[in-house]
Length: 593
Image (cartoon, rainbow, N blue to C red; front, side):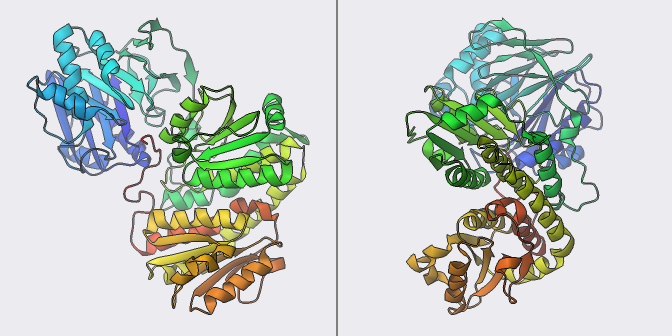
């Protein structure tokens, strides 16, 4: 959530700041702003997208130092006053901030008693004033930052300009991502690499409580012990950060249609020459574990439900699956030798970072499944597996979900050297391609029906139920239609009371074991007036079914037919006239709890 850019010494600061913020739009925003030093601190900000900054910024910015921000509201409504950057009362310091300051009320009261006034509702303005207060006392910016980090409770990534240091951009980080880009005659910072890849492929990753500054020639970093450290430079491929729509009208549609290629890439990455290529120590750890704990949020939690069932059914390993934000406050470690799998598309999910801190206090090994190399979570776990899905710009995750399920299936196969999983995944690729080439018009006709309703039900059992959860979430996220996913067997235990005349009910039937029971559930809702749409496999299909695909291994529903669910949500949102890629109130990378 939120995005930060900053630069010192760059020749085109206006373009870097605005285009960089546009590259970070996928993280979510309600306002955007830029600040720079031109004799004094100047701020330009307002509600809306980063593109509007071109209308309010000077055509040429004569400044050595610039910062920019896209805000996703946590404290205070979206407004110009609450937009970033925020400037301190005496105009010495301006900064942008990602994260949440938990003790901002106490700090605000502390500053108020010392004569400070506030013009916004944000926790960020508190940081700016507190830093200025410490700076005016110490007359040393680095000392002031040390005092600041001792007082702040919560999460923060800060990019800071000080009127007295026209050639430096200061930075401070805890629990929110911040990356330094190393240039020649300039240096950059941003929330992730995407705004910087057109300028450099060399990056320095900051750890929690790191602070310091960048100038045109220097990257100066101090660690949590306040000792100056030399940070290792890493190289990132620019290909992973392409935001090219490649002729598609929306990122979501483009990303749905990349699912088949993502699955192919995963198979070729983790299986070659008739062998699985996972770290042998990871496989050994999983085999020796007597209980695996899965942690995830939203889409990643739905993938974890699949992973847990796979490990139980095919590897005979006991598992539990938790929503990370719940587990963090009631952590449990069943078994004598537990192992924890964390799933996060961004690798920066705040709820999972909270969980990881608890896990690190135990002698427990961990695996992160993520789409982002070098993320905060990856630096704290025992093992990391990458999804290799390429950048996912649309806020509603599609190809990353299918990749998570596919990777979990490969991992389950590797534990017992079950090569059939690879063949099964190759079968799903054919199904995905068939859906892409043959079903979109028919899905749009279903979308025409659904867009007229305020409520929708999804039904499934076992792996089809897990897919129903993800399908329902997608519809909620981008069409704002209330949707529920119900296990078929649970209908009669309460939810069937909500079935009414014409209510759309979408049913997945791809598991031979549960197909007969699901057909019974269909009759239950039909008899109460529901408008039923069935997605089935050929061997389980009936003539009245809406969409029928070739047979595939039932446990791979989340790969094979997830695109049906994603296309449906996409077309409903499109037909309702909404912003498909940037749904209201949501952010791509959830870096606040």
